[in-house]
Length: 141
Image (cartoon, rainbow, N blue to C red; front, side, top):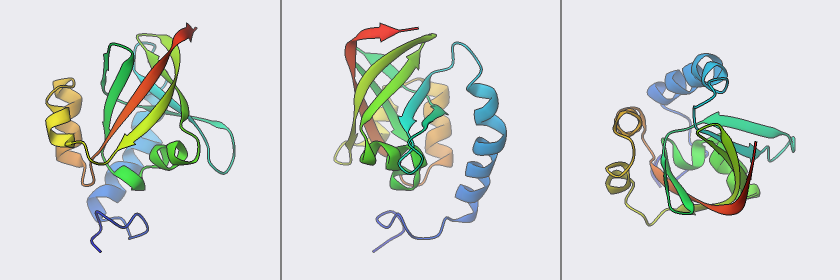
């Protein structure tokens, strides 16, 4: 079984560096930017809301994104435990249900998403995983 298939395998150096930078520097700043897209999951252990800045695109009643580290990402683990999520898009919160799509081609999917974020995900990521969030009709502030 390769690192791509085993979420318990140790992180490589690149993933450790990128994850530490995101967790301690980028994410705390980006979460506060009003127009930054943010995914809110429920912590699988704590039960508390966990907010992660993400890139992606709304298409109709769905929001699409690609996770850089697949099952190794905490927000992916949270989705597996509880797929009910919220997504802040252009400053408005939308409730939805997240679906992990391991059979989707994440590289092809990235070509349909915003270019800057997609480039970063391709360069920094090592275990790409497509996620579709089916958005509910109601949204809140």
